[in-house]
Image (cartoon, rainbow, N blue to C red; front, side, top):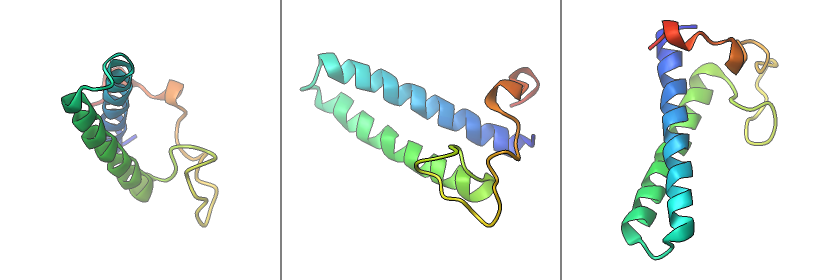
Length: 89
């Protein structure tokens, strides 16, 4: 798997982690405007990162949000558990 693709996947994973953490924080601090602003910003960055990845490399999900292209691309790449994260990025 090429380095640029791995970097994009890693960025998506990092943004998802931040979104989950901010979501949990907001569950207990719903009035925190800074956290809410951060959540909105990171959520937007995540949507953009996913859109960029899918435009360049195909779908991240096999159903739901991703659209089928001219070919069935879902099966073309290694599964998440097949990626050698130690040898990348």
